[in-house]
Amino acid sequence: MTSLNFSGLWKPIFVMIIVNLALAFVNILLKKVLNEGMDYLTILTYRQAISAIFLAPIACFYERKRKLEGRIICLLFLSALVGVTLTQYLYLTGLEYTSATFSCAFLNMVPVFTFIMAVPLGIEKVNMKSMSAKAKVLGTIVCIGGALLLILYKGMPLINEQPRHIADKASTASASKLKKWIIGSVLLTAGCLLWSSWFLIQARISKKYPCQYSSTAILSFFAAIQSAILTLVIDRNHTKWILKGKIEIMTVVYAGLVGSGLCYVAMSWCVKQRGPVFTSAFTPLLQMFVAVLDFSILQEEIYLGSVAGSVLVISGTYILLWGKSKEGEQCSVKDTQENQEDEECGNNFESTSNEPSKPPNGEQGFSELQVKQLAVTVMTKSR
Image 1 (cartoon, helix red, strand yellow):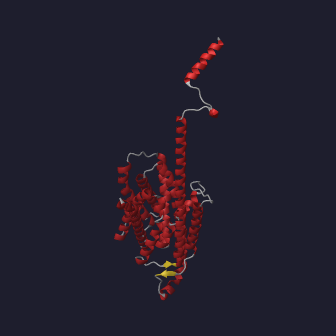
Image 2 (cartoon, rainbow, N blue to C red; image 1 turned 45 degrees about the vertical axis):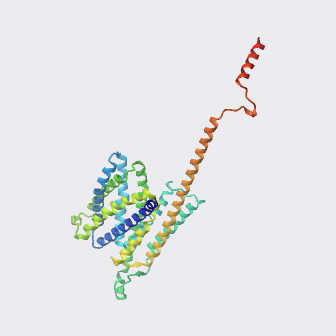
């Protein structure tokens, strides 16, 4: 029994560590092929097509009995456009202009942006008298401060600093590199905002069509079509569709099969086992893994601004998630108390209804014989 509890406790943790490590390799491979000149939309099209092909048989096997309405299809098309096509296009463009470590820092702000958007829509409620609401607001402020620090301050390189003679030669290109860094930061911020809005759209879809595999397969199918059309509109050069070399083929297959397929299935399983707060809490691990791989494989520089901003973003995210978890605990305790009160009221009502009625003011009731004698007396007097 103890071994089963231990397995149930640590298995989701182990799964989320593996998922974030796998996603870290996805980011590193994407950064490498982007540096070599591969088109973003080509990557996105192939990735989503592979994901749709992989998830379609699973969806048909587990969720084939569920009917799909036309309204759900329209919502899934909008969800694919907002949450996949445009989001990943902006993210991949920002990834090319910056670094893998820097780009992953922005992913940690998605829960904060989602919270900010959910408040005016009434999905999230903020009661400043409770500790959980104060934690959510504080986490939001800290995370936004970290994002501003990431965008506005680059700082000195901390690791993998170039030799002085190479740095002097590269000083002429520093202005254009800084410009790309700022443009990449803006694109990453826009991508995070779109992804946050996708969570709100997806929450509405999941209530009306709670089939994860089917919705994800359809989502990937729509995203592949949208990306292909967008690619043909922007640039009609057909040579970009040809994958060159083993790295590009491996990146596209790995990103589609693992990044958009297996990782999603694993995260969905963890959400069912331990909840969304537990699953979201492992997001900063992705940035840590990417930072190590970015330095060891791609030999990218790590700057002071990226480290300081990432620390603030991760801290703000954990404060927000802590507030959300406390709010969930308070809601569950409140629901439990209300259910207990309802049960007590029901039990009291049943016990009261089963008891024989008593005369008011403590008066004694008449027996059946006394009632008959009184009736005879009244009848004789009336005669």
